[in-house]
Length: 184
Image (cartoon, rainbow, N blue to C red; front, side):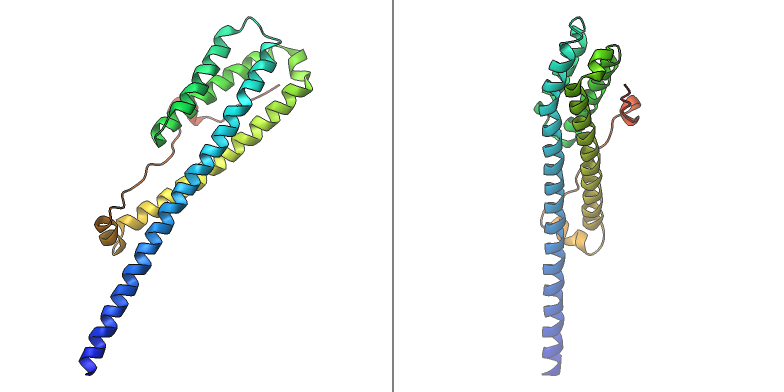
């Protein structure tokens, strides 16, 4: 009788451990999905701000056609990207295009003094900060999830239930790793 109760208690503890570990893995996976959605929200906000910024600069710098085309191409690539790696690459392309746009804006003192341009630049700067925070939160969530599915005993359940590691949102090489410099 005592042996049966001990076996039943051990089985009960194992079941509780399995439930706890599984629920933890699901929570971590959902946190990653949520944090990825937050990155998408901020990228969409930046995507929506860019046409207003481009139109404002166009009014002053009509002959800078290549810069505007590059921003437009990068913006389209950003919306067409689907995987984490593709979004990161498109984001880096867009950041570079925006650097060029702001470099053009530096040549036009009237533009830099424009209230509309200053407001758009501040909104874009705030959005860039939110994107950076969202990336950090996403990568922290990916790290916690990947660590959980790779450590014992949760790795046994992760393999059994098909939990796979997630990609980090990484900056590209070269200038993409440098801070965005916007000066007026």
